[in-house]
Amino acid sequence: MLIVQKFGGTSVGSIERIRHVAQLMIDTQRRGHQVVGVVSAMSGETNRLVDLATQINPQPWSKEYDMLLASGEQVSVALVTLAINSLGGKARGLLAHQLGILTDSVYSKARIQGINTDALRREISQGVIPVVAGFQGVDVENNITTLGRGGSDTSAVAIAAALGADDCEIYTDVDGVYSTDPRLCSKARKLKTITYDEMMELAGLGAKVLQIRSVELAAKYKVSLHVRSSFDLIEGTRVVAEGPKMEQVVVSGIAADLNDAILTVSNLSDQPGLAYEIFSPLAQSTVVVDVIVQARAANAEEGLSLSFTVPKTDLPKAKEILEEKFRSRFPRMQIQSETNAAKVSIVGAGMRHHPGVAAKMFGVLAAAGINIKLISTSEIKVTVLVDASKAQEAVQRLHEAFELDKSQ
Image (cartoon, rainbow, N blue to C red; front, side, top):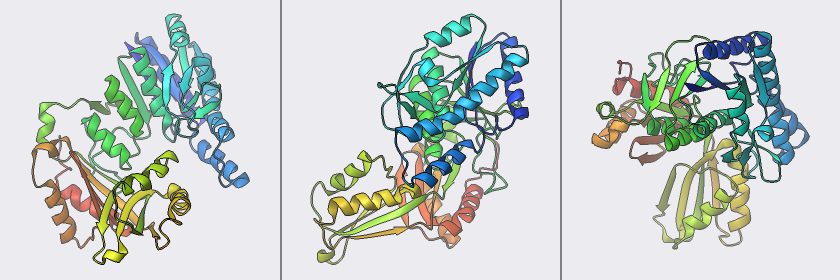
């Protein structure tokens, strides 16, 4: 079997852990498998680099910013490679430009366009373990790019897809995917399996186990994903295509995200194409908009209002764009924001075939006296915005109501 093994920041957070990871890859190879390692920066290193950059420039986003952040993975690659070689294995470290991970030029949020697998296949055929820097790529002008926070997951899945790997193991500091965050609910339960669609929804809603783009890639190229702990080598959670039995489980997981802000733009003229005009410049500036609610005021003079969520980190940028693009056109426009909000979501492939799930969720929250600010739904998800102070209680009440503490 050809196995891609990705190790997150906590897995390579110290010299002892780096040696442990190195031995794990050697042991996997000695069991007869071909191995490719993908590593993140050491735990806390990317945050340290971000802090350095923002001390110098509060808005540092540029080619040089990506060059700086990518250095964390370079350190990890070198140390893990040295560790494998010192323990009797054979390894070679590869950075993005050596491997040929080509991306677009959207710095800090680059997307992979192609991977040259020649160097990887050559090393593998010679019994060498290639250790690849996750999170980074290069554009057509050979500038270093980064894939966004958690981008090493995407690197690993993309490499697994390009190689046609039999398995892609994502090693982290938890032993799998849970029905909700155990820090919010003590009755959270590890899932044996979860569908690509469910995992994408949970990842997009604040679950930190996998980056959403990595799951999108895995689903597209049918990459087998196995989320497991690097500290306790037990079976983790398999991310799989949907099967008939999964429809029996109405809700598989609950996510809570306290990293979004609500932005409300009011006193707009009600006219065709307005939503496109509002959201297009935000998209061009890579501001991710999620829950959207449009409302017409009772008083016609007050026109239209749009409420939507954006990441708190993008809130200043979003406000600036709206002021710049629309203030002269809508002089009475009001822009209000709320940062004391949490996004709580229930997710489940079985929701496609079971009516009344949203009503049950709303009833549970109403009984708990938890007010809902905004609502968004999809085929397998219902999301509500509530006060941040009520997020944990909402998760616990919903976890109990949908009986997620019971085994799959």
